[in-house]
Image (tube, rainbow, N blue to C red; front, top):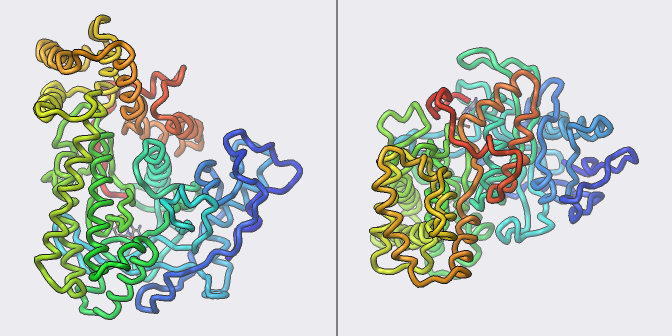
Length: 534
Ligand code: AMP
Ligand code: MG
């Protein structure tokens, strides 16, 4: 399949926005390739999506489009309606639906995987509503972590052989959350699959009530999950497992091919990438919500946005997922769960690794990567610079204080930069307000912080504070903001969603007129939780 015609070349198209200037707007994408198919028929199903009736392009990420060398049409520009219709046609799955299956070896495919869900073996799962359209070259591999391609996947375009009893659809509200959060996370500096665009339709979809169908097109160098390996290992197909490991090594971690035990090297690489990812999640206060092994990416990128949440009033036991009654996937448990998931991956790879102790040792390296990444992340967030002996206590006491006061994670860290920059100016009201329950404990802790920073001159303090503002975001996709944007979008108005998308592109910069997006949730916002329904 080809995306050639997506590059708008019509004379009526608006000029390239400044942000897209490097995109070579008229670049023609070659046909999308499938490489996964070379693994063999037991890995996938060649299966055209059903698509969507009368799809409408609602949201586009200009940044993600640029990753493919495409110029994004603007759904708000009537003059670009032709381009928008073309995008809607392709990314609803309608174009692939019209192609003969497996044409030129390039038809859409869905893949089979398995997984552990909430600690239990769930057996075979698979892309129940995702179609891989194929892979496009990445004009700037640096943006794809050095990989030279982006895989293009659409989610919600209809049933696949792995849909079980479900409908293969995704509703607008969950698609909107995935779209907004993927792009927001990327701009926060957290590895994540990207969201290219969101298309919706009047097609009714039954969940708790009747909702509207949508499709998100997403990009990643790979959509391989831990669960892909578990599937072939647990069903005893070790020859297929070996092919999959070779494929993952060649594509994702070519350096592991040189190792005497490539499967072991692969496990170690995935462990290191996962540790770096989870440290980033912890620092920005992101809770994934469904860290099942089928939702763990072999690249160590955030994947499958379901009932995720950003911590507002800090509670280490916070989980946004109402199905998670025991808090298995709560903020404080994410590192331990990541390690547990790596154990599941190690077990799956064991037939190839051979030696159980080596596999265990490789998993235990998770802590060697996670602990320093988390430590450095917090040193930066608090403006402490290189770690000193007493710093772990200072950091832990800060986290305990945030929890005791249910202080807003994002606001508290952001405001702290002012204390580091100008200690003589006193504690900002916005910071004080977060610790209203224990003002004296805040004072005491800030005095310890100032003693720790004693000796820094004004210029050094300014430098530290500036660094803090580059790691402590002003804007995250708070639950209540997402819900508000969803309510408006469901009524046909995507203005609030577009505004969020725009502001969350620059999460570390205070943007005039956007104070409402930086504020803590209003008292009547309701709990920041969701079910898995999507
Ligand atoms: P998730 O909880 O979204 O990660 O999904 C778990 C599994 O269920 C995956 O294999 C999904 O592809 C599948 N799935 C979830 N929702 C649907 C749906 N509406 N239709 C088909 N499969 C689905
Ligand atoms: Mg999933």
